[in-house]
Image (cartoon, rainbow, N blue to C red; front, side, top):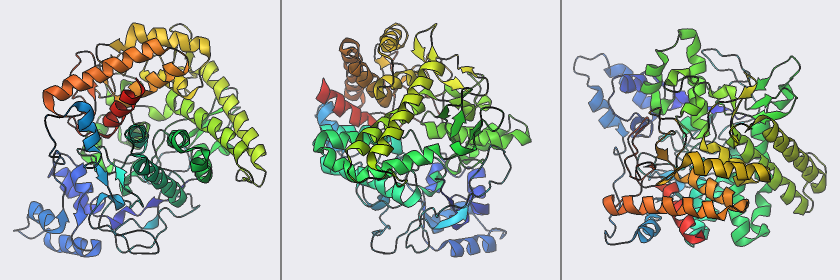
Length: 562
């Protein structure tokens, strides 16, 4: 299933002459502040006033924005918490300040029962339907994106039915893959109702849009993130039993269909090798890649993308924009993992890579669907058969993907799982911590899992935990940085394959780093420098952020499990 996008012209914050003027003049150091702003009047009225006033000698764009938008503060204020608290008590006390309701905007009303909402309007803006790149995207019309009762949009937030935890800092909305790690922490903190409500939010997004957007903002309408919805359901199953999961299996099937949409267009024997998020390997097996349905600068990083594009010829810029957006869908924005030249972001080629983590996670989703559909009486698997027929199909799909992972994504010389470049028909010659995800989802061969463990100990283990990659590119998803979600997937994956010794060592080092940094700063950070065991991890597109949802979640989950 491929959703339509929003009509960006309804949102002066993310499209049109006013948007470009604000971003190109650099009114805000962080361009995300403007795309997150709330209109103080109707979009049509704001446009009308801007067009009427902009050529007047006394026109001042700063004053115009101040008069017509409520712009969020540069960084959300730190909550007023007791400085004498331990790290664990601090994390527990942060759940409430980081929780938002109904999209996180005070102007948003309830979105049920046909009530009016300051939310997005489903329209017919565009998405790409093939691998050809143009300056305008084409439309594949098979459903409305955001069909709901709304009045004119004032905010770029997409309303959600239940309270939810946001990361913090500049990230004022929910994020897909962040939320799984946050939910693990909520479960460990006896906040199960909040965790279950967040799962229901993602069910609502799938029901409305056919997939989970990267975040609940209009400008994230064309990309998702690492599809960890099935892992959220695993948390519910663990804490509340299969009865809590059964109503949501259909939503998981729908999300899986989004990732597999396009596979019928593939032909490994001479026809198209890729379509949307699907790729045909040389033997005909279908695997997946990251993608974005738009080939243009990101509204939230408009200046940065435009500046980057000056490094390539004009005709190559749409593909550059798509590869940048696809890297954002991966969550690893940015990393040498996606670059042909590890030090040059303009060499990005995300859509040419079949990532090991994405395919290992989809193996996990296929395995979960096979298990749960087999247990769901009367479920037809979405095509008229019975639940057992659907379960068998997903089990077969999981087997095929596991075989592909072992055949194409394994580096025998270095004993590690790696990405696969489908355009070059060879594994990518870079080791990254994404190689632990087959252990996390159970896709790894046991002997190879042991080899991965040894490689982690030899090359990735640092004083503060596991380093993200072995390259120092200056990008934030590279050395010397470490990230909470990767520590969690490594620890859980190693435990799954009975390598508790190394898992415990990683968890202890990561928790000690978090604790030391907290005692020095009173804060929890988005990422850390694991080589120097400090909080001073500041590479990337934006300054270091504090809060921080997934860091807090993994501190709580690791503390509960060690």
